[in-house]
Amino acid sequence: DEPFPGGAVVPPIYQTSLFTFANYAEMAETFAGKRRQPIYSRGDNPTVMEFEARVAALEGAEAARGFSSGMAAISATVLAFVGAGERIVAVRNCYGDAYRLFERLLPRLNIKVDYVDGSDPDAVAAALPGAKLLYLESPTSMMFELQDIAHLTRLAKEQGIVTTIDNSWATPVFQKPITHGVDLVLHSASKYLGGHSDTVAGVVAGSAAHIKHINEQTYSYLGGKLSPFEAWLLLRGLRTLPLRLPHHMKSGLTIAERLKAHAAVERVNHPVYSNHPGKATLAGYAGLFSFEVTDEIDIPVFVDSLKYFRIGVS
Ligand SMILES: *Cc1c(COP(=O)(O)O)cnc(C)c1O
Image: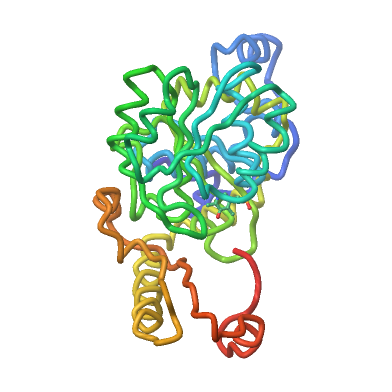
């Protein structure tokens, strides 16, 4: 790696809206795309580019694009590949606001979304013909259902369908979807990538051609760009990602095991208890899971009695 300006060990925050050119020729060549140089921070910014390069490296992707939130990454990615009269196949129980994007905004653009049980390859195969995009999330939000990523991606590829996956839960430490054929990997960087509950951000990683397509179709015009300060916080978070995830795994499994052994717990939704083939692509387990209690448990009383947990999202 080249040292940062002044020999700084940490990338500086380029808190600037625009970047100036030495002369007319330099500007003209940059605008013509003959050289890549930051022009304006709604496009490229060096602190953000540093974050994008590291996420791309972690995911085994050629390129990545940072966004102001996970939802900005999801909406800009989906809208870059699907247009009026076209169709998406999405796994059921995908992240709630992704589902609401699909249900509220996309119908107004005449884009249809069909939901499938992603754990069932036959159901996915039956829904795919004619679709433009396959939207995966393994494990799914709340229910933690797994998908056989390699199998589903192969089915989509045979029909030229672009595949995306929300990898926020596993992170590239525990799952690298690109190595299993997925085209584009999405993250809410607000969660494990950031890791300190002080940032809302998103990112998508994939081939240079796919990221270029997103840049050209939606990124600059929807305008949900990542701020240099947030990118700097994320770069700090990424430094400890491989140390944090094994600890989340250990804590999560300890609590899941205790709940599973408890008489008042009916079911623990944690991928560790699944025997689905989709488990094979997970090198470990993040800390988030859900559980279902028996009827005799008064849920509000239970939640308000917790001593070590605070009540919130994320
Ligand atoms: C939080 C979350 C998102 C949305 O990300 P934001 O950064 O909140 O916009 C998307 N997918 C998953 C799995 C999430 O947990």
